[in-house]
Image (cartoon, rainbow, N blue to C red; front, top):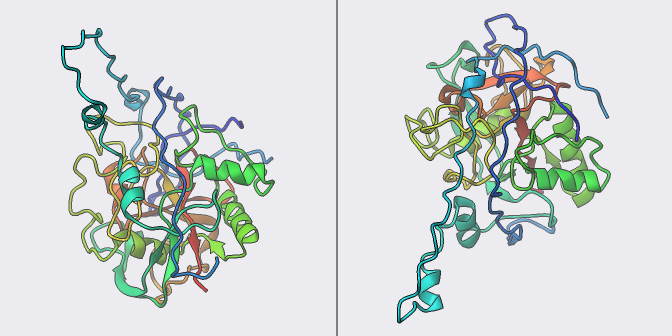
Length: 351
C-alpha cells in the first residue's frame, strides 16, 4: 500500500485563512476479530434498463476541531468466552440454539428486506432517488451555507446506497482502471469505506465504472447530495435535531470516539435507503468550492463557477464532531490531495 501522511480530520471554515496541518496521528490497530461482512449479491429492479502519484506534502485545509493523540481510542476488545459448562440431561435442539444468534446488522437487515440496483457484481449498490424540490442550505450554520434557496431536482437519479468500499475500489485496481491503491491505515479493507482519496481519485473511479458498465456514473452534485441526505426532512440531521447514540460515526456521536471508519451499513439508513450520509467518511461531490450560495444553480446541477482547485466535501467523518454531520454542513479540500478522512459515494444517471 501507499503510505499517506495523516493529519487531523478535515473541515474548513471558509472565513478563516488556511492553517498549517498538524502532525499525522498514529494509526489505530484493528481488533483481532474482523467485522462480519454482508453478502454482496444485490437484486436488480426492472425500473432501469439493462443496465502513482506522490501526494502533496502539505494539506492547506483548516481543521476544526483539533484532535489530540489522547482522542485516538480504539474500539474495546471483544469479550472472551467463559469455561465450558457440562450439558444438562436434555440438550437444546439446534433450532433453539439458532434463535440465540446475534442480531443482524443494519446492512444485513436491509439486504433481506429492500431491493437495490447493481450494474455488475463488484459495482456499488444503487437506489433510485425520486425527483422533487427542497430548501438547500441553512441560516443556522456558517456563512458558506447561506442563503437558503429552493432547488428543484428535475428527474430521478441513482445514488450509491453505501459509501464506496475498499472491496469495490480494489476491484477497479485489479481491472487496471485505478492505478492508485490507497492505504487503509491498518483498519482493514473489505466493507470499510475507501479512504485516503483526493477528488481526482474519486473522478477516476467513476470514469472507470462508466467505461465498464456503459452507464453514466459520476460524483453527485452538492444539491443532489443534500437532497438525498435529507430525504424529505427539514431538521438539522436527517434523523432529527440531535445526534444521539447509534446513529452515526463521528468523534462525539457515541460514548467513546471510534477514531476510525466503521464498515458501511453499520448504522440505520435514511428514508431513501442511504446509509452513512452522516459521518464515517467525508464524501467528495462534483462542485467547486464557493464561499456562499450566492448565484448557485437552482436546478440541482453542480456549481462549477467557484474555486475549482478545491472541491466540496459533505457529510462529515469519523474524526469530526457532530456539527459537521448536519445536512447543510459543507467544507472543502484541495482537489489533488488525498486525505485519510475523505472518500466518496457515486451517482449515476437514469436514461
